[in-house]
Length: 226
Length: 226
Picture 1: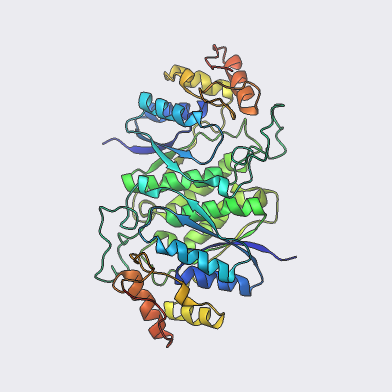
Picture 2: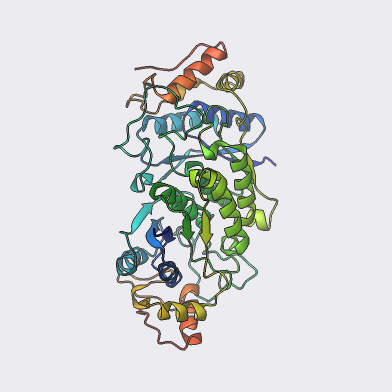
């Protein structure tokens, strides 16, 4: 019997690689994405395309209006997305969405309960996003502990495992592994402010990290830039 | 300086009491509710009214289509709401919404980050809902641990506290305390299948627990029944 897994899939490079890793480990994959008032709507379409190419089941999208509580340049139109590169590791960037990974994993946990999956995959990465509290190993461990007291599967069943296979990988290592696993990165969108056609700005933090990854991996960059 | 708190407010008896308790402890209250595809839409209106009567700030509502992942009689129209009373403590009831409290607390945590609150209140109760994994003290403790690694306030600031003041109280004790604190329970809706005017069915599990609470507290039952 195959093991079922819920994969958080944003349509970006990291989560597409995460899906490929789960597939390569033999999991039956159910992808889940979010329409949370982010500016980069093109990534929702990218997620559908990536899921169609690689997943075992139709992509599910949960809509939630995180913009109602504000607080991030990604959902709040009164805060500018920085275009002057990375903010450095010490400060938490303004592109941080409040409690985002906590919210996304929680809903993924609900989906896992419904379909009887005991595994969740998230493309969280501690290397490139050292300023985000919810992109650290401690966060993943604390969420796994929570999942195992919060659910039927945790309390009565075999337990829930949270997988964050990209956690300690550089962007170069991620894009190299994904390429080996057959990920078509031209389908993915990483840019914080992609246009409606999905073309990337090439200037924001996410674009710069992604571009450098392809350079480090010595791979051609398939990104469609504006 | 007053301490800010986010209060999960559904419009039911428990969460209205929880808000009154937070107020009585001197917290500046921000209420948060959810429109998650539940059948009992009347409770959303009740929550607005309760917040208007007792809270310090306008009620916020987050919409999220949990029905897209299914799995509960409260959001999935293909599962009947039981009308033959409680399901007993051993089994998890079909009215359980997958990972609901985990999801709601996660979004409350995001809201708390945005407004700079370090306290969350939830009306979870281990006495009446012993079949729900996410209504137990272990769940609250695990969520508090998570919150303190997942957020700026937890990592850099004074930490996050999760308050579940109703956890060990009976329904009778809850309605007695709320009445002492001035809660107008005629505003609240507890029924799983209230009609559009907010009248309760009187038969579902939630109605029976609520009615028994008023009897145990020796209080008149102000509920509007169908």
